[in-house]
Image (cartoon, rainbow, N blue to C red; front, side):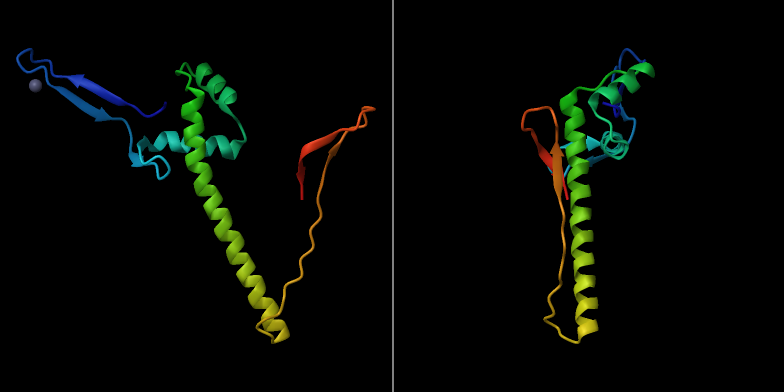
Length: 139
Ligand SMILES: [Zn+2]
């Protein structure tokens, strides 16, 4: 991974003590309760933000002459950040719903006014001669 610890041994042969020098900050991963490097969590955020995966990150690191990162480690970072992003999104939706409810009730002077919503969705189909329906869709 990108965060690491330097082990520096004392030059004095009588001492030979090893000093541990962290090359960055660390924090506790709320999902695994383990201690992780901030830079690795930021890498997970960068992957999600840029929409790139393990292959692209490792190609990028390899071009920079840096060691590739195991896909399981990258996934762990992505999951940590993903959970946080999901929580922010849920809170944002909850707040927007509350504001919409308030505005609707204010307009109609009825505190129990129902909010009408309209949703449309669909999924991919292919005209290959065979019936094909995609498992994923958008709404
Ligand atoms: Zn020493």
